[in-house]
Amino acid sequence: MSITKAEIKEIIMKLPVEEIKQLIDEIQETMQTQDLMKLAETGFQEWNDPEEDIYNNETEN
Image 1 (cartoon, rainbow, N blue to C red):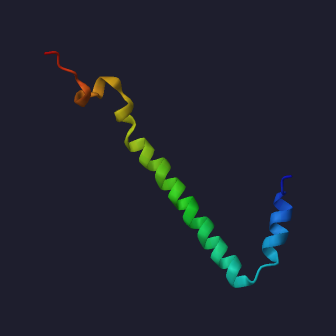
Image 2 (image 1 turned 90 degrees about the horizontal axis):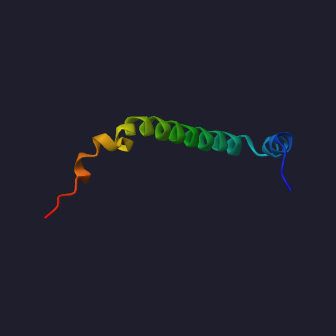
């Protein structure tokens, strides 16, 4: 059973105003965290390049 966007909105609108504000704050914090994680991923793309893997050189004895 899935819940629709309209049903979620209806439930939220029944909450006290302070709880709605708190929910909005939590949603915004989650969105900011996800945005920062996406941004951070782009900063480490060179780690996926095998030619740049200088620390994984195996030496033969």
